[in-house]
Image (cartoon, rainbow, N blue to C red):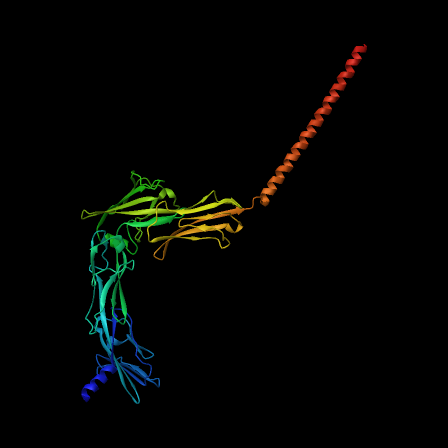
Amino acid sequence: LIKFLLFLFLLLLLLVEVIYAKVGEQVTLVPKSNQRQYVYWHLGNQNGPQLAWLNHLGGKGINLTDEKWKSRLSLQDASLVINDIQQEFFGTFVCKMTSSGKPDSITEYKIIQIIGKLDVKPDTLLLHGDILSLTCNLERTPQVQNKPSIYWLNPQGVRERNNQGKVNVPATSDHNGQWSCVVKDNNNEKKVHVPVGVVGDSHQYTAADTSLTIPCSINSGVTWEQILTKELEEVWWDFVPKLSSGAVSVNRERLFDFNVEKRSLTPGQKKGLRLVSSNKKENLSLTKSKGSVEDRGHYNCSMKFKNGRTLSNTVDLDVLQITSQPGKELIYGQQVNLSCSTGDPLPNDVMLNWTKPETSSRYVQYPTHITIPEVRKGDSGKWRCELWQRGKRLTSAEILLKTEPRLSVWMLVIICSAAVILLLLLVLVFIHYRRRKVQFNHSYSFLFNHTEIVVQL
């Protein structure tokens, strides 16, 4: 009975902490108590090789005899820091703390490797429709009461259901970005990030009167070199405009043809667009210095590969624009309606935010427009609307309003000037009339006198 109680007592003193990490990370092992006189760090168990030590007098030391531990071990206060942990370092570490008059405190740290990977080469690009295969597991299962749960978060931060550490789905543009493998138990949570590159359809927003760039179906993070690994042969651009009614035109316009092997470019209907050819991410992108609402539509970039497969992806371009009714130059007291729209209804995850001049206060805001019942001086300035998606600003548009009193200084100057001019004209007419009258009277008198002389003769 005494041995059993002693065993339970020692078991209570022996604490076990599980830490999840991946190769290359920094791992910090923190002691459970600050009340110590001597701290010893061991590998494997409390009788294993000593890695580091320190005491309450300020003395400390690190085992540097083993080459593989050099430049990787350091002490931060009483914590043991392992930099750039490699696969052979995963295992058990023991912290033994002693104090006079107190039993030893022993803590085991079990560092378990998380292996999260994309089951293709890291530099290989997935085409739209290819199978996206992700796996995440532990190097070994920790001996704990409840096994940790393992699952994936997609680039939108949404948990993939019932995957048990595995994802096996056809790739789409929504899968492009950073995936996170999550290992979670009662005490902690650890994430391991895996980048995934997918060439697929995308939606793009820009604003009127700003420059625009339309990538050739290359999502963020995908390089031109990755595209070339798929043995790209030919690329061409088509454009289907959106009508003012919001409907899509039936007319398809060819913009450019580009032969990758011959490096030859055949332009079509450019529409002010320019084709960029470089070794950067935006290779074969379309650019325009100043966009307009006429640029709304579907831009289709087709990629033909040597294996006979043609991948056609569409960039749906929406142009954000602010309009003001009745106009931008307003008189105090007028009602103004500001509307901000791309011409199409916004997706559920895209929000529109307004930014007004600081001096403006009286207005009624709706989701896509603002009504100012009576404009005042404070309403002058820049009004901006922005499109946001999951905490990221997509684009913004601005409009400058000018407001003036009903009789501004310039209007008074113009009115007074007009009155003066009118008065001068009246004076000139009067003077001219008087002169004509004097001349007429003089001529009549002269004629009368001469007639009298003739009669006398």
